[in-house]
Amino acid sequence: MKTIAPRVSIFLATVALCLSAALAGTAALTPSTAPSADNTAILGSTAQKAAIIDLKGEINDFTRDTLEHNVDVARAAGANVIILNIDTYGGLVTAGLEMSRFMKRQNDLHTIAYVEDKAISAGSMIAMSCDEIVMSDSASLGDCAPIVLGPDGLEALPAAERAKMESPILQDFNNSAIRNHHDPLLAAAMVSVADTVYWVQDDAGNKKFVNDVDYKPLIASGKWKDVPGAPVPVDGPDTLLTVDGLHAVQYGLATGNAVSAESLAAERGYQIVTTIHSGWGEAAVEFLGSSVVRGILILLFIQCFYFVIHAPGHGVAEVCGLVALILMLGVPLLTGYAEWWEILLIFMGLALVAMEILLPGHLFPGITGLILVLAGTVLTFVPMLPWDRGATGHAWPAIERGLMVVTGAVLASFVVWAWLGRNLPSLPYFNKLILTQTSGKTPVVAGGSHGSGAVATAWPPRGAIGRAVSELRPSGSAQFFDPDISDQRRISVVSAGGIIPAGTEIVVMELSGPSVLVRPNTQTAAV
Image 1 (cartoon, one colour):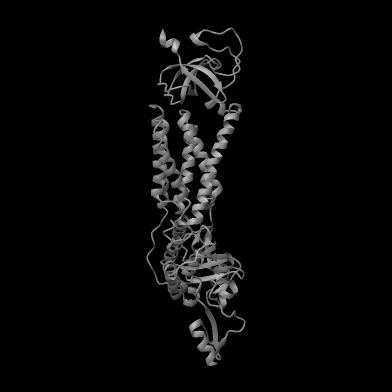
Image 2 (cartoon, helix red, strand yellow):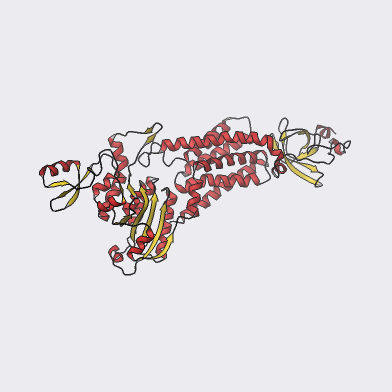
């Protein structure tokens, strides 16, 4: 235990330090906001320098930090116009609200949301916060109602609870509509399912949007009628407003259409000073955050943790496990799906599991540790807990996904252990690290003398004498003389019965599959 326990402690402590360093580096990405200026002066400037910034994929905390960093880079490049190239189905509402408020604070820049394909949910919230919206003809904008998904699907909510969930989103959309001269009814219709919006005009051609309360009296008066060619109503009582590029221009939500962000800049005579595409970092975070990859990382970490406990000393398992754990927990921390207390649960659980392995027989630390590790890992798949419905409402599907991934990884670990038990001795390189290796030399037998000259089929052979390097509880490391290298070599062994202290002379009893079973050398001890 004196050898294994420090290795486990150092392993867990190193992981914690690396995660802290990674998060500190991420926090440093957030730039300061430049002093405000009159936005109308920017619009009237003759030197329009534009930066195109991609905003694609899931909206989360990492996307938020990246956007803030990219706007800072664009400003440093001399841009006074930001064209935000949006293509997203949305994501975390909290991150979307923060990004919306951030864009509204850029008073020294003219901000344009260009939607080539889609700006849905949190994406529409960010688009509405920009000074203007430009879309391709076929692009989609809208559908930003908060929803609650339970184990059985979409849940119906009481009016008061739905109003509580919608309130911050409605407030943000209303603020954006007033600020950027959009109709507040249209903005609200993107969020609230119950809203009904009609588009009417009078004989003079004046048009306006009205709700269902005002619509009937206006039509009954004979002075107003539905706008020809427009849907009646524009948005019904059981739908969310989602518009394409052409209708967005008709309704005054978009100022125009363009086939690309670059063509928009060319049409307006903007000089593009920089184009910031979604880089490999964003792609890597999205890839590593997928359920399949996270499941593989969990599987890899379980395997490495097992080898760290049962076969310490080689360093390969320690390094691989460290990398797997950093990726497994670091990505959820970056994207906002994991909190520090969830990570703490996992580390506490790992410590208790290690205690049970090193000091067996208590059971309680091991069971408690496993529960903490599993619970903490599952919660890293959940952006908000079920009782935090006002934020996202996607807790139950996320919990189910986390349970499926974690359970699948644990079951796969047992399959991998069984496969390794049968095949690892024949795998190149790995059999040298922790398993036996064939040898054509005459083995060393008890007492240090050579045998009759028979060729052994495995090394170390039965009866070989060695010494325990670490305490065997029951697994650990031992050294045996290898005639192939004329030197001592360390391998993993298993005590056939009881704890064997470090430094004890041991003898090989038998080779059982991938395991080398040993016992204390009682003949030497009796001399």
